[in-house]
Length: 182
Image 1 (cartoon, helix red, strand yellow):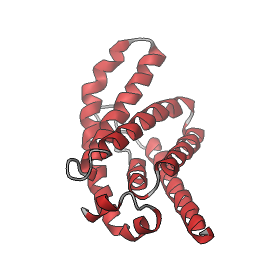
Image 2 (cartoon, one colour; image 1 turned 180 degrees about the vertical axis):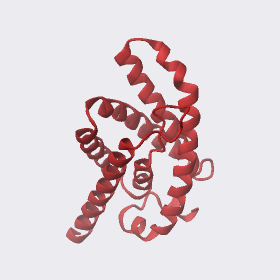
Image 3 (cartoon, helix red, strand yellow; image 1 turned 30 degrees about the vertical axis):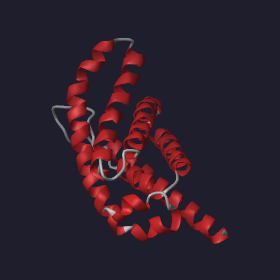
């Protein structure tokens, strides 16, 4: 049992480190979408997606919290606020949609929903900070690119989850139903 716990903690630490580094690197790069400033692929969300399917909810919440805090230390407080609001709403949406089960929604569908709600969360924070709802007019653009990025992240996540099936067998029995359909 102690070895299982150690392996799980090392796995969580590795995922957290990779997600944090990916987030910091991506935040230092210019937006890949010239006509949608601020839109990014969200590569660190690939790690969060993998965690959702390989860890317990409480472990994923710890991973996301540490990732957000560490990334915020390197990118600044305002980026932290936007990442926090987007990350929380995205994670909540992905878990709620995952409840539908693998017969109704795929890993890609869960990721697309996460991309959409991440942008909704960020725009809600921007609305709160700016005290003007006109910021929400940017939602159609960001929603489109968030769902597009979510699609790419979902495809990559689906492939990665297939490759790490043995890890899922070690940590999470609840997700086996999902993993058999990959």
